Length: 208
Image (cartoon, rainbow, N blue to C red):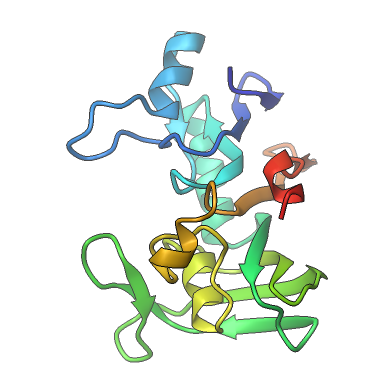
């Protein structure tokens, strides 16, 4: 069962579990969250944004074409505020920072930094709990590139714990999952009111 954080006639906000894709994966028959919720509700849903399969937390689906257009515009204008929590290796020297590093696809689903051919990308971050071996960071993506937070934190030398794509695989495979969680989201509804959503950190984050 997928927890519902908010629902009305136009919008559905879910607490996505780790390990399930938002939309159908290529060449795979496994279930995706879109189809699961469409079957449960008995109606078509519109994908507003995505979370990587390995990521948990807040996910929005529009229930009407009008809400879909509204939220797409809000995302395009960067008016939707998102907060992610990431457990990373090591501890940054500074308490807060900004990462401005252009990102592009390098093939096989991997993204990377390319100052010349990449698209401008910006992530703000701050240390929530620092430690010698691992630290908990809050990450605030200003832009929304694929794998942006994962690539940016890897770029500054603090890959996310459990990230098999960006980091030392021999070390990362010792962890149960990618330790990245979509923790908070704020967006303006069509009537002008603000919707604020929060998703608590999964219990696994407290173990490390």
